[in-house]
Figure 1 (cartoon, rainbow, N blue to C red):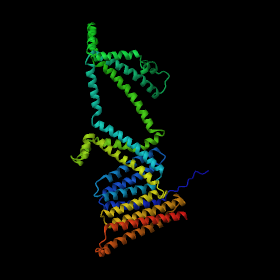
Figure 2: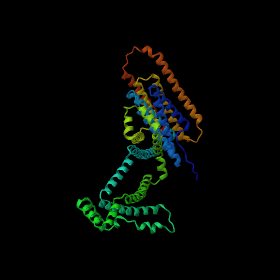
Figure 3: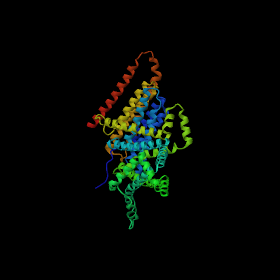
Figure 4: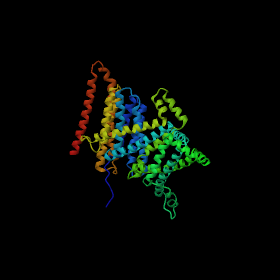
Length: 505
């Protein structure tokens, strides 16, 4: 039996031409709206998202990791491009719709938009977001010197406590010894799982003898410790202990000197620190295993974008000249400067990246809801949504008082994107992607693009030579926009009707 599978994806040439037309239309709309740099950044992001989604669909973990990095970079680029200052709401709509349109068209052309693709992107976002949030918390804690301050306070508090009175130090030593015994039993069990079995293992005959679990400690020990704690907290108890030490003369003085010394506490503290590290490492291992799930290579590959972003931002923001340069670029009164001073530059940028991914993660359910509409063509959803968003961006461009050529290019680009995308889908369904269909695709594309360019030229000439002669006609703005909107709706309806009739035939 043959392993051949018919690939009914969109034809490569027509689909890539549709992507190119959408990119040109979005770039023209962005440049003429005064957002040239933002448009270039957003288009780069749209391309990175599509490329990343295609790599995420691969079978190799390395390809998935590369796809996660590209996908995260693309999402951040689009969100940054859309977050910059916009002159008006109409310009914001132009940029948003045009960039999202290119992303939809590119996704449909490269991987196809379906439930599996959406779930893969959602998994990549969720895992990368978790990594970035953890990294941001750690970076903010390091900036605030949380760990070093906590260690200093702990050592100072412990030092003042154990040197306050011999009885207090005596009770603390017993508690430290008990903690070592409890941690030792747990640590030996962990090491038995980590280290390979040997014929003679000294752990089983040495360390295990000193380890004890909480339920194995006699109740009398807990009762004695409770009484000692109560006595250490009361002046009468401490005075009674001093009297007992004084009755033993030189031996009591020696015991008091040992109890008030930091040496025994340091020995027990070092043992507790070492054993706690083993137990915490085991806990981190369990959390990591539960996080990666049943497919660790795939989970790690999906989180590669967040890992690379965290490492990159952490290293760059740790360079003092870079920190001064970036901080100086925002100014002293900027909210970013306040965030840098409060949380640190690394934590701030990690939070921004995580926020961008969260925005994308919130958008995904909306996209899935839109994809469930029956009137959208199931096999060319990305092309249909991309063309529709380009039409919306064109109308918004007209409302933002852009040059007429922006409207002409936007409308033509939307229609060409839909036409070429639909042709790519039909050709792919009929003969597949493997078949040689370039000649027919070139003929169709040349005719469609030629008609589109001719329409743009005729429209520009009409504006230059005919519109000045009719300038005296007082036409309300809402009527012009309404006529354009009705024209676009009629074109979309006619295209939908034609494709439905062709499918039934």
